[in-house]
Image (cartoon, rainbow, N blue to C red; front, side, top):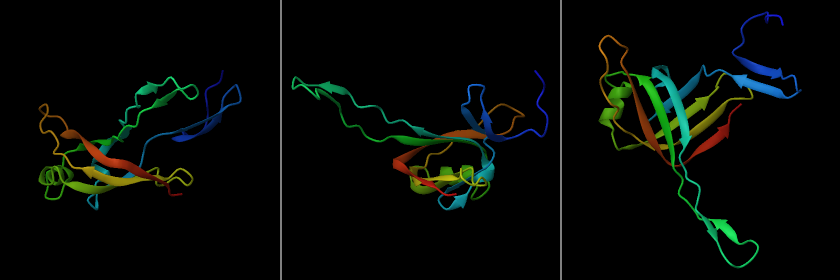
Length: 157
């Protein structure tokens, strides 16, 4: 087996030995706004999480179909981890000042990649971040923002 040559790729597609196409991509660039302010440069981790539970399985004696799933409520959240910014209007200050308020958010995923740029938009309940940490470490914090309803998903480019 020989070592790969050429520049290191941050993503792309490969063909596996079985002939199946493998597509991969590193997370490198997003745009993230909340309340109309761009906080992209403060974020270092994010996850859009579908916490919606499956409905209970219900059975009847009436033949086919004799089962169904009960209806459930949508439950989405956005977990973000960021470098603390306590300046006026910084993300930490903004979240503290607006705790429990509802704000619009937009998250653009892979905005610089044609054919993979997608966007989520919606409204979330703001929450104050936790504060503190170990001495002489980078001040980071994380918070889970509850999304109202289902975030809208759009293919951009």
